[in-house]
Length: 189
Length: 189
Image 1: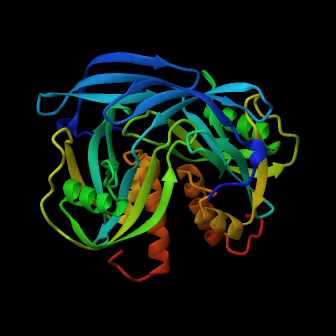
Image 2 (image 1 turned 180 degrees about the horizontal axis):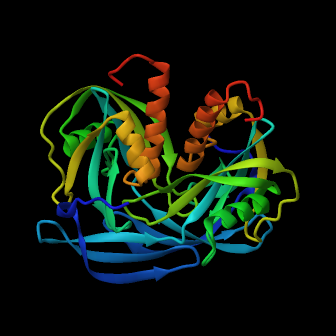
C-alpha cells in the first residue's frame, strides 16, 4: 500500500492536540520536511465512514438531509460514521437500514477512499448493495432525513442542478453508470 | 441549488470559534434542529480547492506526495487550495503549471463537489485540461512532489493497489474511463 518514495517522506516531530469533539478531533503536527526544514500540518482526525450505493428497481436510494457545513439540504447516498471497533461491512449494513429501512442480502466493497487527504484522515468505504428488501427506517435521534428514490436520469439531473454535490455520491453515480453500461438491458440496475 | 425541504432545515443558534490555522479553521455551531431541540455541529472551514484531470499522450498526470494525514505517500491528480479571492479556473491553471510544469490551452469544469459535507465546507472544482504542453514545475517551498505519467491500465492498477486512494482521483479515473469509451479510438485520451 505504501510508496517506496522515501525522498518525499515527512517525519513527525511533535503533535499539538487542539480539540477533541463528538465527531472529529484536530491536531497540529510539526513535521520534518525532506529538505531538513520543519513545517506544520493541520490534521483533522475522523473515525472513518461507510457509504452504500443501493439501486432498487432501477432507482438509486438517496437521503435528503440538512448539511450545516454547506448551509443547505443535499441529496447523498446513505452513509455514516464508523462506531468504535465496528467492522465497515457491518456498519454499511446498519447505516443502510437505519437511514432508509432497506436491508440487503449482500454488500460488495467498491472502493475505500480518503475524502480530503490534505487535511483529514477520513476514509470512506463505499459498498454496492445487492438484493434489497424494503423495511422501516430508524435514523439517529439528531438525524432528520427523507428518502428519495431517483432514476438514473433524475440522478444526472440532481448532479447538474447541484442538489447532489458531494464527492462520494457523484462517484457512486459514475460507478452506477459504468455498471449499467456493462449490464446493458438489465433494468434492475 | 437549494432544496425546498424546509422541514429538514437547521438554524444556527451560536458559533464557537475553536481554531484558525494556515489552511483550515474549526468552529462548533449550536443549531436548532427541526424538532426544536438543539444540537452541536463540528465544522471545518476550508478555502476551497481545485483539481485538474489532465491526460497527455494517453497518460494521466499524477503527483506523488507525502500526506501526513495518511502517514504515507499517495498519487493524486494535480490539486491545490484556492488563494484568497482567486478565480477557480485561474487557480486550476496555476496549480497544474506549478505542480507539473504543464500548461493547457483550455480548462473545462467537470464538477464542483464537497469532499466531506458532514464536517467540512471544502468544495473542490474539478477541471478537464485540453491541449497540454510541457514546461518546468515550480512547487511551493513546502511542497515536495514527483510527477508520474500513468497509462489507463497503470491508473487502474494504482487504484487496485491503494497508491491512488483519494476521492477526487478515483472520481477522475471514472470520468477518464467514460470519456475514453465515448471517444473510442482516440488514443490521445
